[in-house]
Length: 257
Image 1 (tube, rainbow, N blue to C red):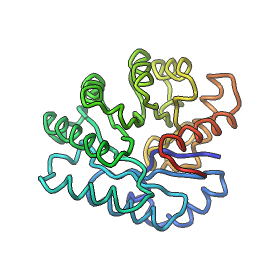
Image 2 (image 1 turned 90 degrees about the vertical axis):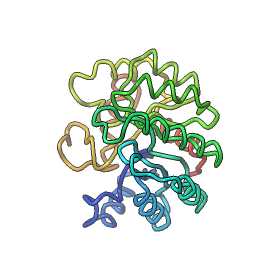
Image 3 (image 1 turned 180 degrees about the vertical axis):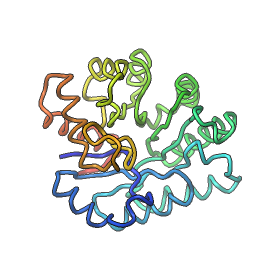
Image 4 (image 1 turned 45 degrees about the vertical axis):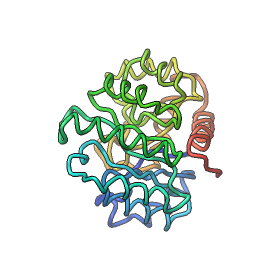
């Protein structure tokens, strides 16, 4: 049983074979997927996927790349999306991205806080994007009492002390294909030291395909490679990794499989 806690199946790269692919994933033991929106338009396509496929759940939110174009009505629209169906299980993907700075940093921080407040209002966990903004991301989460709703730090890439601080606040760490890449000593240490009860599996499909699929379009069937790597690090079976991380995801998103 695999639970993919972060994917983007409304991406154009899945347009031609989405239905066929979802059928293959079920046969490969993928029991649940959280499709994450990145802007207001993809909130709608994410909700559509969740309505069409029983095993697909939705996260609605605006990625830091896209917040520069938001207006004062955006929060109300996000609120409506979040309350549209019980299959909305999180607010995301939200956060900070200082690598590209497609949106001004102060605007990113303001909208990060705004969407955390929305999550608290609708009582949903958050899915957090953080790239080259580790300390600011942590400061916003801590300062806005985001621990009240909890969530997951997507594609965790921070150090071990920060990982422990997030876990202490009740957050999970999202682990994906990056764990299988070379030269990820910091992430390997995090996975070695943080208890499995605080980890989630994710793909970020169609991005970040793991070795040996690196460079290809990623999908949830590749979760097994991540589970196998975690199992190798922790000296347990891949089946145990899949089971525990799925239980963690069900607990966080309050879904039953």
